[in-house]
Image 1: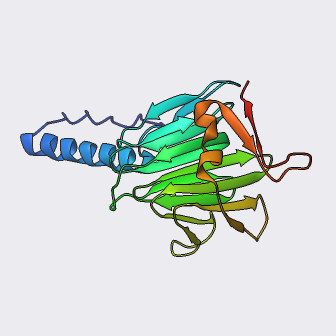
Image 2: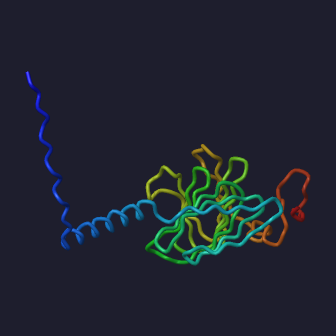
Image 3: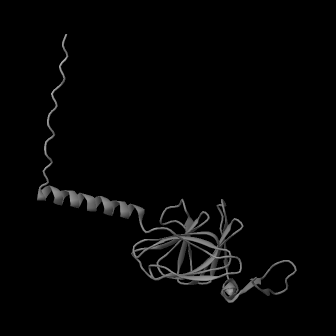
Length: 201
């Protein structure tokens, strides 16, 4: 038996036509745009050391004041505003944009606003949200978009991680924001009569 090698066909020349090149370019741009939209803005990480405070200006025009020993993760652009307060405390002064809500996640709580000022403290497994201007919506991260508790100026919500109950109260805004001037204020603590201010170290 004789085995003959298969005849190899000569490769066909690849012809680029202007129409084909244009279609390829459009597809490439579409794929690239889709991937960019899927990723969203890049994540930035901001942190402060113990005893340090820091003021940030975000891409959407909002500002954040970070308290001592805090860590913030932010994905913010003019069309996407999502942040995570991993630890510590921050005061958010949010630029108004009704089309793009500003969302801060702290523990298992998500705070949603369109333009306001509020303080978030994440410490020892508890999240505290205090509103100093405007209106804030606070909800569990697994809840629907219409769920949650509506807070207005002077309202404070505290909730422990994993708990199904929130504690609502009226806050002394000067006390809550005293850290911006380098002080901590304690009230209603054992052994403290009427409150005390201590300098931050």
